[in-house]
Image 1 (cartoon, rainbow, N blue to C red):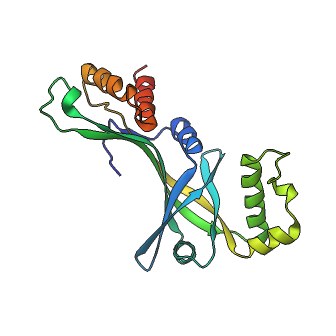
Image 2 (spheres, rainbow, N blue to C red):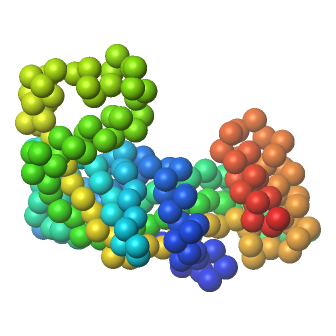
Image 3 (cartoon, rainbow, N blue to C red):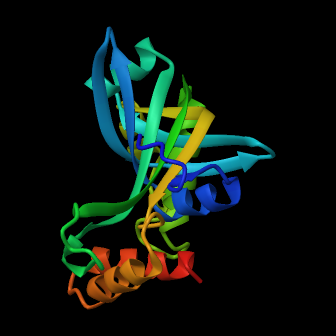
Length: 204
């Protein structure tokens, strides 16, 4: 990760809301030094200073085998990003760059048993489906649920290290920041608009 002081964020009160707003994370593991990565919707839970990430994967995949073989994993939560052209700088004969926000959560993974995995699926489904939805968990038959649970492995990651990188032109003079925000705000790209909003919020 890009650990530069102006961009580095360690405040849990800022990192957790970002993670909760971007829960579809990339979880990375390794089996015999061969990396595996998969995108997974995660639930972010906090108990005091302890942060846990809960999710599930398909069994008999490279990432499942990596998680079983090696408890050390990394979850990457990524938000909006945008190319920033130096053409809007006070001195345009400069390097262009990329603004982005990410949170890196390293931790220890524990694979869950069948009952725990069922609870994970139920909680995740209930989080996104309305109670009266035809796809709500309680609308599914036990036969259907039990059949599909055979192919699923739940997991819980206890976070041991949490770092955020919010690279939003903090190292630039105010004139450059205002010009970047103006350029990105006028874009038709929703990610560029979101980066502009984050920059405005950061600078009050």
